[in-house]
Image (cartoon, rainbow, N blue to C red; front, side):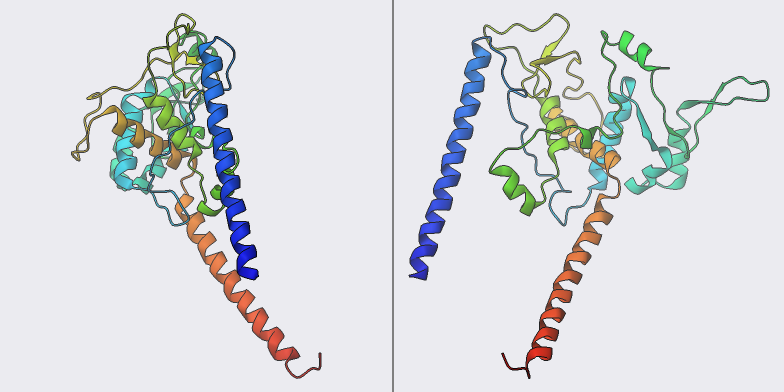
Length: 292
């Protein structure tokens, strides 16, 4: 009887998941139809693609080689518009760079300091304790240089951006420890530029991207293309690789202590399991000689 009940429950669970998946497909198809007919769809039109990240899961860790490549993509491409004001140069040592290499890297930047003895602000060469400077003096200047849309700061962008995952995905996410919504979104956005579908018009000066979370198009032109950045380690110099590397780097920038957090969490879970076992054995020992 127990086996029969278990089998029925299993069948019901599988059927429920299948029904939910069918609903999700219907919703996605309905969004596509609404978009094609000119109605306002739910954004993003396409859900972000899931990437196999090295830092995923409870035992995930950063790939330092990938982070170094992502830093190069950021400095050679993204830094022209996007600041990273909460990340200091000295934290680059976590990527495998030596103290001297970090000093040399910081020396490529000029930062505003002061006031001096005369009460004036001045420019000086950056040192490791400084933070990545903004390419613009203020938000108004940033907006004026980018068609009225100020580029967001990249310090926490990988944690601040993400697309809500509905049922049943969020249930499985609790067990798989899925926390890569931000990098998945950034990667999908960078690789998702395309020509608008027939019958779809986008505002002048914007670019169609079905992975954009706010609308069907955005003001940022496609920032990456094949062969744009030269890698020293022989990695593919493609749009796909650039997008993965800079997305991973931005995840590190947003959560540099991810590995320590996961390591601590694992030790806590082991402790709780051992503690639970000791409590159970203690209970058995205390009540073993007592009448029930």
